[in-house]
Image (cartoon, rainbow, N blue to C red; front, side, top):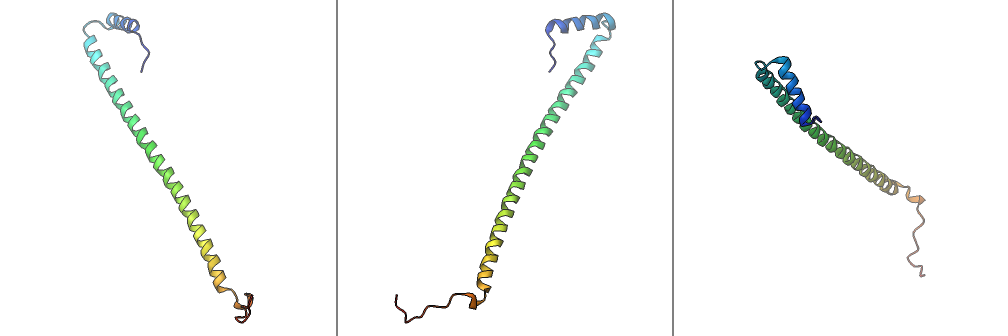
Length: 105
Protein backbone atom coordinates (compact mmCIF):
# COMPACT_ATOMS: atom_id res chain seq x y z
CA UNK A 1 0.00 0.00 0.00
CA UNK A 2 2.72 2.47 1.00
CA UNK A 3 6.07 2.32 -0.71
CA UNK A 4 8.26 2.52 2.41
CA UNK A 5 11.52 0.59 2.59
CA UNK A 6 12.85 -1.00 5.76
CA UNK A 7 15.51 1.71 6.08
CA UNK A 8 12.90 4.48 5.93
CA UNK A 9 10.77 2.67 8.48
CA UNK A 10 13.75 2.26 10.83
CA UNK A 11 14.57 5.95 10.47
CA UNK A 12 10.96 6.90 11.34
CA UNK A 13 11.11 4.60 14.37
CA UNK A 14 14.37 6.19 15.58
CA UNK A 15 13.00 9.73 15.16
CA UNK A 16 9.80 8.77 17.00
CA UNK A 17 11.84 7.19 19.78
CA UNK A 18 13.88 10.37 20.21
CA UNK A 19 10.90 12.75 19.97
CA UNK A 20 8.34 10.78 21.99
CA UNK A 21 10.58 8.91 24.35
CA UNK A 22 10.56 5.22 25.27
CA UNK A 23 7.62 5.58 27.69
CA UNK A 24 5.09 6.73 25.09
CA UNK A 25 6.27 4.53 22.20
CA UNK A 26 4.27 1.35 23.07
CA UNK A 27 1.03 3.29 23.48
CA UNK A 28 1.60 5.22 20.22
CA UNK A 29 2.53 1.98 18.40
CA UNK A 30 -0.70 0.32 19.59
CA UNK A 31 -2.72 3.34 18.46
CA UNK A 32 -1.04 3.39 15.05
CA UNK A 33 -1.55 -0.38 14.72
CA UNK A 34 -5.22 -0.01 15.58
CA UNK A 35 -5.61 2.77 13.00
CA UNK A 36 -3.85 0.68 10.36
CA UNK A 37 -6.16 -2.26 11.12
CA UNK A 38 -9.22 -0.05 10.85
CA UNK A 39 -7.94 1.42 7.58
CA UNK A 40 -7.42 -2.09 6.19
CA UNK A 41 -10.94 -3.04 7.29
CA UNK A 42 -12.38 0.06 5.63
CA UNK A 43 -10.49 -0.68 2.41
CA UNK A 44 -11.70 -4.28 2.41
CA UNK A 45 -15.28 -3.13 3.01
CA UNK A 46 -14.98 -0.52 0.26
CA UNK A 47 -13.58 -3.10 -2.13
CA UNK A 48 -16.44 -5.53 -1.46
CA UNK A 49 -19.01 -2.74 -1.83
CA UNK A 50 -17.52 -1.71 -5.17
CA UNK A 51 -17.55 -5.34 -6.34
CA UNK A 52 -21.19 -5.71 -5.29
CA UNK A 53 -22.13 -2.45 -7.02
CA UNK A 54 -20.36 -3.57 -10.19
CA UNK A 55 -22.34 -6.81 -10.15
CA UNK A 56 -25.58 -4.87 -9.65
CA UNK A 57 -24.72 -2.60 -12.58
CA UNK A 58 -24.00 -5.65 -14.78
CA UNK A 59 -27.34 -7.18 -13.84
CA UNK A 60 -29.14 -3.90 -14.56
CA UNK A 61 -27.45 -3.65 -17.96
CA UNK A 62 -28.45 -7.24 -18.81
CA UNK A 63 -32.01 -6.53 -17.68
CA UNK A 64 -32.21 -3.40 -19.85
CA UNK A 65 -30.90 -5.37 -22.83
CA UNK A 66 -33.49 -8.11 -22.25
CA UNK A 67 -36.25 -5.47 -21.98
CA UNK A 68 -35.12 -3.92 -25.27
CA UNK A 69 -35.12 -7.30 -27.02
CA UNK A 70 -38.53 -8.17 -25.58
CA UNK A 71 -39.92 -4.80 -26.63
CA UNK A 72 -38.58 -5.29 -30.16
CA UNK A 73 -40.07 -8.80 -30.33
CA UNK A 74 -43.40 -7.46 -29.07
CA UNK A 75 -43.39 -4.73 -31.71
CA UNK A 76 -42.64 -7.32 -34.42
CA UNK A 77 -45.52 -9.54 -33.25
CA UNK A 78 -47.92 -6.58 -33.14
CA UNK A 79 -46.86 -5.51 -36.64
CA UNK A 80 -47.45 -9.03 -37.99
CA UNK A 81 -50.81 -9.28 -36.19
CA UNK A 82 -51.88 -5.95 -37.70
CA UNK A 83 -50.87 -7.18 -41.15
CA UNK A 84 -52.86 -10.39 -40.70
CA UNK A 85 -55.84 -8.44 -39.35
CA UNK A 86 -55.75 -6.08 -42.31
CA UNK A 87 -55.62 -8.94 -44.79
CA UNK A 88 -58.59 -10.64 -43.09
CA UNK A 89 -60.63 -7.44 -42.91
CA UNK A 90 -60.03 -6.36 -46.50
CA UNK A 91 -63.01 -5.80 -48.76
CA UNK A 92 -63.73 -9.10 -50.48
CA UNK A 93 -64.56 -7.16 -53.66
CA UNK A 94 -60.99 -5.90 -53.75
CA UNK A 95 -59.69 -9.44 -54.17
CA UNK A 96 -59.25 -10.79 -57.66
CA UNK A 97 -62.29 -12.69 -58.89
CA UNK A 98 -62.24 -16.43 -58.22
CA UNK A 99 -61.31 -18.67 -61.09
CA UNK A 100 -63.99 -20.39 -63.07
CA UNK A 101 -64.13 -24.01 -61.83
CA UNK A 102 -64.94 -25.15 -65.37
CA UNK A 103 -61.88 -23.43 -66.76
CA UNK A 104 -59.07 -25.80 -67.61
CA UNK A 105 -55.57 -24.48 -67.92
